[in-house]
Image 1 (cartoon, rainbow, N blue to C red):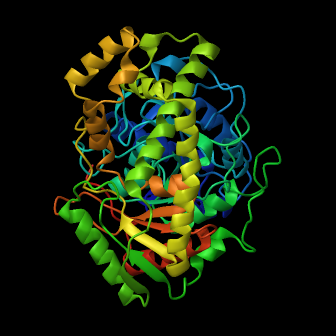
Image 2 (cartoon, one colour):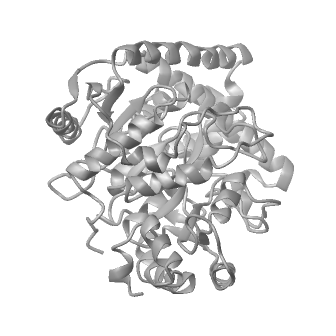
Length: 493
């Protein structure tokens, strides 16, 4: 199968061709690898090829709902037994996974052919995919711009046509931000729906979850069925699943929904005119489709939520570095300065401060639940501005130098309590202030590619639902996809 034919199909469509015997898994894999060889040198989306393993698998009998479809996994938390999970960090070079992650095993059980791991920033800590270990990843729609983060490698690979769908994860927007940057569909499942095992009960206090980035809604729905195929009996939750498949639910009409929308930044920063227009146009489309749509605010204290998010973000960075150093003997210089400064913020926190910040997640959840008593969904921009240029959000040299000095003197924790550090954090959160809400509250949310700038850059809009609203989100996404198709749009690589 040549690339032009391959690009016409999503994962569900390719699986149907394999099941009918019209194409083999080996032929699809060859096409995917050939496409990767052609475009990846410009994108830096795939950082760990697995061609030999994939070719052996494609030559063997495969079964499952997506048997024979080429697939990529994120090089963060999605472990493949015997292979490194680099997490975008020099500290994990050569450290090999002892077992498959449950999500990876479920993708294998579904018959997918995994042939590589995709780029991520160090430990997924940034909304751009720029790592000292693997270099920057670029947006297929404009190579000077970011594909977002932290699942930017997967997003770039899907947008560029290497695969129709790829593994991703989301702890603060890391599925939805890359989806918005690359013109893709990205659903963050609700807390506990997808297993984080076997190595941990929950990722990032339950705020993070695995999922996928895709070109079509039905691929994401099919993948959610794969990821929830059976309960994780060692996990902390037994999630309530719908009576029918997510694939079937995505095909249904959503009914008339009540949708409140806002484009105001929850942390009070500027919002680009394109982001405002993206929401306004989405609101008009929703009204034309028969939904009740009106301006509304979430009722959540966005500035406090961002501070509580950062409290956990700092602590998570500190714990990650400490654990890696204990397990691998990694040296201080093996970690990026930015990550070490985040960790310093974690060490500088007092235990009561951390516990109180985490306890406030409950207040944010209840405030959002009150919003969902009035509205089915909250509509916002996914990004406060179009995708930034590669390197634009890099920590200024002066701050990095000062940080290095303070780290050596064991005084970096003081920097994280200064205005200069607060300004730098806001500069990095400013373009992505909307997505952390769904992570801290554990609610499902999605980015839908309904808008493009005059320069041709994608800019998605976000919908946040209440607990268990994945069926509603998928049904609405399917309706929007039918009304304003996006899957056939291809970047000019």
